[in-house]
Image 1 (cartoon, rainbow over the protein chains, first blue to last red):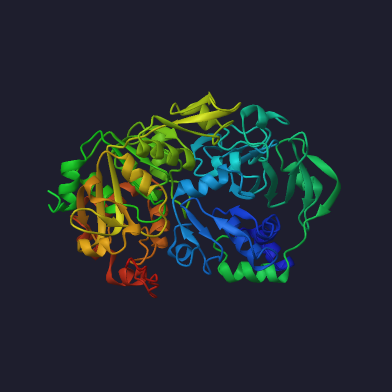
Image 2: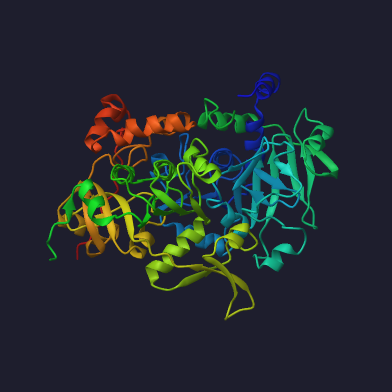
Length: 262
Length: 307
């Protein structure tokens, strides 16, 4: 746990990661099909299921479909606990087929870099003036291309939220409005939110991200200073609602030692 | 012919069926049932210039790259799923250590499509995935084209036919008819796309066990070149109904391979100086093996094939 998130936990009763989990959970509607992924999005899916979205269905790239979430902390989507009691243990092409048909409502992604148009890079890192090779797409590019909505989660700093990503592993709105259609991507698809450690960004009709809410205790100036482009701010900027007791309780039941929610 | 046993040791399977220069599919079930024992034997037999194919394969790809066995990797994700990056992969790409590595980046779906095309015997299959991405620009096996039946752009994913697919399975008979359950990933497509299959089985059973539940037979024996009975062969990845994922092993690998000299020690300790899987299992220790064992069985209801 970082010093800052420890201070946050002491002062407010939750960590930034726990706030991000709650914010992400609220992006999932009841009855929706969701490509879950791992780490914070996995927790968000479980929180959504236990609160406002009991009918959400989780899809995993390894072919697993779950209507009842696993009840213990998962390190990977292939953990034994994610397979026992699943609705289906199928093939990758069958879940990816649902995605390509446009039947998957939302997908969650992490990234090393995201830019003002929501393009993601998980292939190359540029830290300390060194170029680092990162693991790559996994299923992220597929989800970014094909899910009806994509929600991105990452730590908020100038390096990660940059003007233009160095490599488009997973396309957002490219260079702005009309770009996705010109590429041939499905009409109903694209990024809908970026949930960071400081706030939540959403996208205007021009495909550019704007600050829609700031987390409790965070100033707009702090967000702007930590963003690598001149970030627009919503006229009706709000404060991200703090996690509720039940959201926190579920998150901690599943991650009692803060393995993912540091 | 039909009843000829294909049982062999891991040493024999790799020695006979997996020469240097092969294109080999590993980790078809993603985080489940990764054939680590087979990968380690390839390292011990000093295979070189391999092309590794797979969606993710967790830390097995990293180990084989670090050991110098690999000249090319075609994958969607190369690293350590629960711990982060793979340091051997990074050293190879960033500094050509221990040798230059050619990386062909796929997404999971396009990897699955490439193997599906191989399994169907067609040169490519179309998808919308990767449109607009730099994967499409840089991977020559992904080509944009105009749909002949609609006014749309699509990506043609070139078929892949690996020389060998190595699949870890729960149980197989001696002829290679095998049952797999759990997450299937690209196992079914991968098995059919490959020119040869080596199975690594937790248990060898009679053909009547396989025939009792033919929906679970995901690999028919006539496609299989060799069957290796190697309990524990997927550790530290999980095998549903046999053992869980050894999360600590992945974290320890992450810590113990950050520096090149530490990776070399790791490789000597866990692979090079280990004769076979029995010895590896002993080295792991009874306590650890016990901690990964199934704590609560959860058998499926039997399906009635009677008539």
